[in-house]
Image (cartoon, rainbow over all chains, first blue to last red; front, side, top):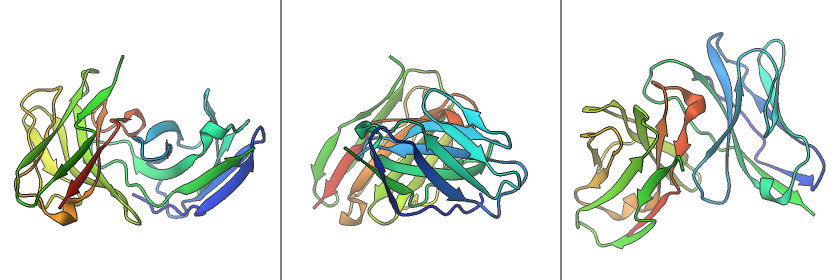
Length: 112
Length: 114
């Protein structure tokens, strides 16, 4: 799996958009970008994933640059409940044993 | 409700006393996995299972055993726990063979070995 690099921490005002960057400059053509989050020692929760195109679901949007070397997770209207550690993962969608290699993630603090 | 259930949520035990952490999923998932989470080290995979009777080592398997006799259950066994196995443990399952977007995690088991 390609290594990903994320800022250690970020702050965001409640109600504003939270933009979480991720660098994956060595990503290979068959690797997807996945985002999970972990709220205070609970089990990680899947948010979104994508390969080349931008993606949107009910939780967030994922913007992937054209060269695929970086991406941004966007929470359009952050709430206090979005305070969590966000993990960006680059992984192939194959039958390998460990598809989720978690790095340090970004600790997002949403403030009132 | 679709979920992964781990038990117990909290456990304090003594060195050398065998213990089992249970994991059960009700989503008919083929793939199941165990992770441990430690401060500064993130989540690391211990063991995984692609299907019944098929298990394999993850990144940190030493000191652990698993079994997959039925599809829904994937217990984690510590034959002789040691203090360095004090950690937060998570079980996860996936609906397709190794599909990373479909992981569902349990609520975690906080284990302390004294």
